Amino acid sequence: MLRPAILAMLLAGIGLPAAHAQLPDAVSVLLRSANIPEDAMGAIVLRGNTVVLSHGAERSMQPASTMKLVTTAVALEQLGPIFRGRTELRTSADVINGVLKGDLILRGGADTDFNADVLTHMLETLRRQGIHKIRGDLILDRQLFQPARPDVGARPFDESAEFRYNVIPDALLLNTNMLDIALSSNAQQLTLQMSPELDNVSIRSDMQLVKGNCSRWEDGWRPPEYVRGPNGKLQVILHGTFPQNCQRQTSINVLDRNDYADRLFRTTWQRLGGSITGVVREAPPTGLPATAEPVGTRMLADHVSRALPEVLRDINKNSDNTLARTLFLSLGSLQSDGWFGSRPIGLNAPEDTATRSRLVIEEWMQRHNINIDGMLIDNGSGLSRTGRIAPLQLAGILQAMQRSTWAPEFQSSLPIVALDGTMRKRLTGSPAAARARIKTGTLKNVVAIAGYVPDANGEQCVVVAMVNSDLAGNGNGRAAVDALIDWVSRSVAVPVKVQAANP
Image (cartoon, rainbow, N blue to C red; front, side):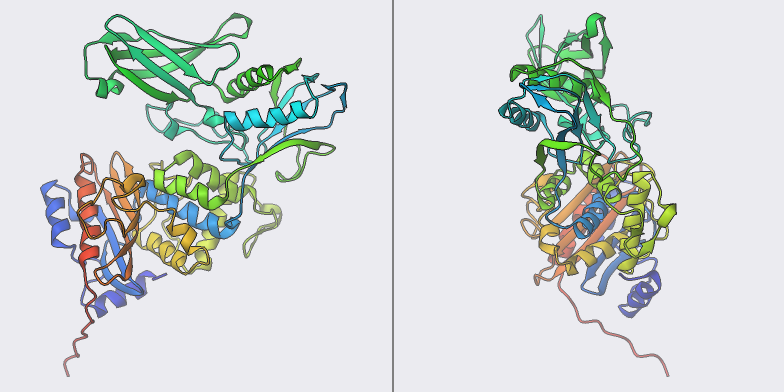
């Protein structure tokens, strides 16, 4: 990684001032036309160890979802490409004549693929073992992450807490806690369908039908709620307005996740011919390491997620916040209490999993000689208003991953310009199309890109750019960073001429 002092010398060596390297004309024109000051943009382009361009690269900035590159790079190196999350069904009770004479433990292990189908297959395994009745409780073990329920009491990122991008994971996140809702209206009536089917859960709407554009139906959406009625019934209620003669689908996270797991388990188990006499409750803290098997229990069924490189593709190509946050917490939960890489922690090991994850990332960066001054990583996804990283630091991570044993796995997780992921419709007429691999990031006041762009000679360049401005929306910031990618893809390496000093 190029530290600021070394970067300054290199910039001077190629005739560019260290703090005010000139942006390409195409980028500058686009910023000016949007009234975005040039100092709202930080950018760096590296061709090997040569600094092609640096503009405010040392400043800590909001990276939006390009922060996912930090999480995925460190996770791939620390956990390895064969890492898989795991969900288990365990018990300490005997099975007599098809009856499980005690509690069933559903144990979470950061399984990013734990959905309704997986739960069905796991419960089918119980039925094949002859179990048809559970005479005990269902225990939800989320203890791998601490706190076990990081979503409880957390301030929502924005006013749309119910949508998937806002879901805060725990170690036993079932089906991402989502309800899939199909909305269909004619001129007089709105019809709703909800899936998956949940025991004693229904849905209704007080949405008013209005004349409007179906493609802009979300303009009338208001946050939904759910109410608990008699006999344990739950009702989800949709609010707002909806266009007449419109059909749309959406997914919402509105139920408490213990309610969700309870109702989905009961529905699935009953459909398979099973019954349960007890309640659903959380596992209490054990005081044991989170990775230790529950004492005196045996495994009845399990599921392992896809291998890490496959999960990385979902995280980076689709910019999945919940998967990124799960992977971020996995870094801290799977690190031993005694050591964080080469850094001894001993009895001072933090209990909070997110803090442990940050220490793992910091130690990895220091091991790769990447300066961490001014960097702040909170949840590892970039869905944050406090997270900060400098373009120079992020470029250092991309350089390190070029040298990594797992470079092919990492680079294949990035969106391919003009072809897939969040870059599928961008730069279609550029030489970067189908050649560059770029992670994107977007918030209300942030537009960012980071990744690898082959230049006109086919030499791969590291490119990072961030625009932090209230004027970055409406395509303004995106046009500027895309112009930088295009400029790199058309550039040709020119030998550096060092002017002799005056005698």
